[in-house]
Image 1 (tube, one colour):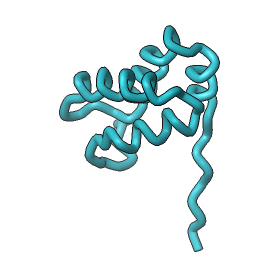
Image 2 (tube, one colour):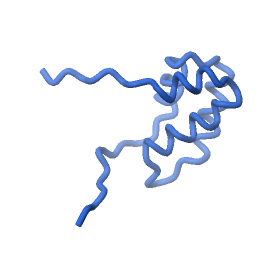
Image 3 (cartoon, one colour):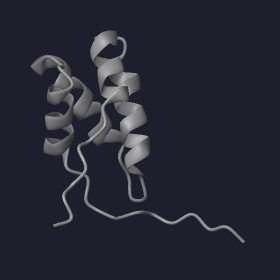
Length: 81
């Protein structure tokens, strides 16, 4: 039997979302608009993948190039040493 588990559990942090949108190249006005909409949607049990997908969907009509950059961005892996 296969069971899906969460990799980790953490609190939703609107500031972290804003930082990641800025790193993708989003304008400040778009960052605020998207982060506010996502913050309104987040409920207990929401996954990071859902937040990521919602963010792309909200960003795409505002700036398709930045939405694509956000979609394809890979976080650098943390060093284990």
